Length: 178
Image (cartoon, rainbow, N blue to C red; front, top):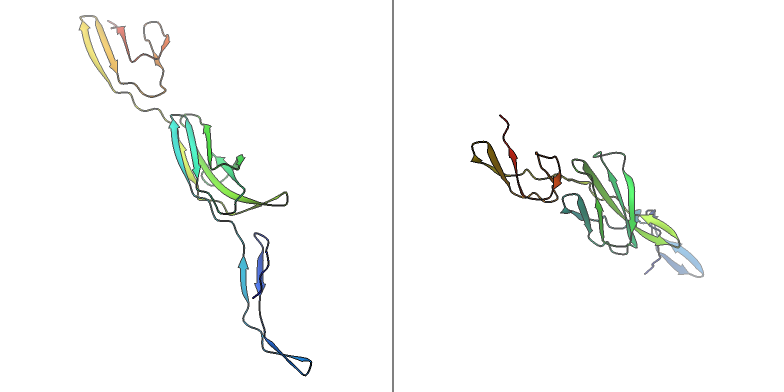
């Protein structure tokens, strides 16, 4: 039996031959076929969860022997990824802009000395922060007055049509125009 520690992301090739010592001389067999191996970290899997309308959390499944994870993001599906975080945690959260699609990918790393040796990237996943569509009823309360009853949309701000002030109320009214 032979064993050795090998470096990550390096391919090693092995071949073996037997020998027998006869009268102090080594007699060798032919070499075996060549076999290769490469030590790599596992590819992380993760989920994207929208915590609020504009907050996303990545939950990363732990990779064996990983010291941490590099998280990259882009607003393009297959290009312009930038590292937004390097963490030893399996959870990462951030606020995102409304109506923009964000693409994420993750890779694990292992420390060898002070050098980070990276594994392969995960698949790309995406999310987009959008407000829900309000549902409302319109009721005429007088000849010249209406009432809007709005079902609340999370994190939405409502604007009063009369004086253009911002409110977080679910109900307001506006005089009908003639």
